[in-house]
Structure formats: structure tokens, C-alpha cells
Image (cartoon, rainbow, N blue to C red; front, side, top):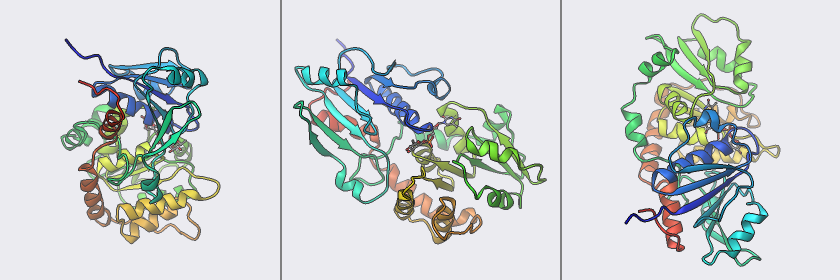
Length: 346
Ligand code: TRH
């Protein structure tokens, strides 16, 4: 007799941009791939139409507030507060679900102290705060089984050609996924100094680069929305990735090529501490740190130019190797839920 799949609910509210849906979808699909029946309750499922056009076996998507009995585990993404009816049903369950608030990703040191803290609720339930992160004392990063093997076997130039975006033999390939950025003209001038194919996914950068005009050594390729699987392939194809937010940052790390991260800008400037924390975590050399700080608009940081790829590689290789041996986020979530009494997948 086969054991029924444990049931996990994942609540997601789309606040801004694509990362809320992006992170939740990857998490849902990865949990389902490891034997969990996932109900993803999301208030705006429209990005999933192109992020995951085929869906994923084991994942059911419901519009907010969702219907049905609560699962064995309930995850609220980024403190989104499950709907009141769901909370009442959770409290009424004979065996309460394991309730997890999965927080935003940050490399800052306080994350290790906050990770794993319980928050007893008036309903009698306990909500657990889990933080993804870059160290063994956090919940780790999303990394699907076999991801790094698939990346290692991937031929980016052949794949790009098959998509209709071929790179010429002498061109370096750069991907630009960012928020609005006043340094785009400086980047253009740097890129135009040697043959470059610049791939520009949907987003603010597309409008900016549309006005760049013709530069002999810089070919700009605007891209349509692509699935998350193809988004990964784009990152694997490029020799330099500009990424932003949370999910594309993690995917750039797994891609292994030099990358520049633009943190989600916050009005109080809190994102600068996040940038510095990640730079420290990956042991970035000074030239890379100067570039990241300038790209993020840190006070007093001027565009330093693009360092050669060789300046990035040792730190990236070290950081990538260290991260690859840590348990990934889904492995850790499954273990946490099991420790707190939830059934495990077969
Ligand atoms: O869109 P983002 O800027 O999301 C951000 C962050 O999540 C941030 O932490 C959060 O606070 C803020 O939103 C509200 O960047 P991110 O996280 O890289 O998410 C982009 C997602 O979109 C990622 O899952 C990849 C996906 N994507 C595709 O799959 N195909 C595409 O063509 C494009 C452009 C994106």
C-alpha cells in the first residue's frame, strides 16, 4: 500500500515585482518533486502562466483565500498572513499543522539569531520563523535535486542559437535583469568596448536599452517573458549576469558565472547593508565590491568599470562550493516539519 503524500499549504501574496510568485513557485514545485502534495494559494497567479506554463505534478494552484482543509504543514511566505478562515481551520484541526513563516533572504548576521524562533499565537498554534540564508545556521537556499549537474552539462551557446538569440563566436554574453538604474549608460559604454551580446529580460532595463541606438560592438537582444527553467538557462549561458531581488540572485549563484546583484531598493537605504553583507559572505574582492556598491547607488560610490572575469572567479568558486555542500531549503523544511511531527513523504 502506498503512503498518501503529506499535504502542505503555501500562502503567497504578490506585493511587488516577480519575486514573490517566483520564489513561491520554485518552492512549491521542489516540494512536490520530493513527494509532497502542495496547495499554492496565491492572490495573483498571472505570472505563473509564463513562469511555469506546464504547471508541476503535485502542485495545485488556488486563488486567494483558497478552499479546503488545512494541510499537515502551512507555510506563509514573507509574513503574508494566511486568511482568517484558514487560521481558524488550522486551530480546529485535531493535530495542529506545522506553521512556518518563511522570511525574505538576507546574508545579514542577525538572520542566524532569528532563524528557527517560535512565536506562540493566541489561537494556541505556534508559528515558526524560518529564514533562508547562506550559512549552515539558516534554512539554506532553494536548490533542486540535480540542478548543478544539469548546469554543468549545459551548452549555453547552442541553446541560445536554438532559441533564435545566437551569439557570435567572438561575443561575450551578458544578461541584464535589473530595476531602474542611473548607471545603465556607464554600463553601456563599458560593454561597447568589446564585442558583446546583451540579453535583456522583461523589466525596466528593456525600456532603457531601447533608446541606446546602434553601437557596433554591442548587440542588444530584448527577450520576451520566459519560463523559470529557461530563465535559469539564460543565466547559465551568460558570462556575466546582472540580477536583482531574491530569486534571480540565488539562481545567479548556482549559475556560477560572475554576477552583479541589485538589491530591492528600500527608501530607508536598508538595502545597502544587505549588499555589504552578501559581499562579505561571498568574500568578494575590492573591485567587485566597488562595482556592486555603485550599481546599488551606495552613497559616494562611483562607477568603477567592469573588473575582468578573473577578478571574480576565485571568490565565486569558493562561495559556490561552500553553498553546494549545505542542505538546500526544501531538504531543511522537510526535516524541520518532520521534527515537529508532520508526516514525511515516502
Ligand atoms: O522581481 P524581483 O525584483 O522580485 C523582488 C524580490 O523577490 C524581492 O526580494 C522582493 O522584496 C520584491 O520582489 C517584492 O526579482 P527576483 O526575486 O529575481 O524574481 C524574479 C522572478 O521572475 C524569478 O523567479 C525569475 C522570474 N522570471 C522568469 O521566470 N522569466 C522571465 O522572463 C523573467 C523576466 C523573470
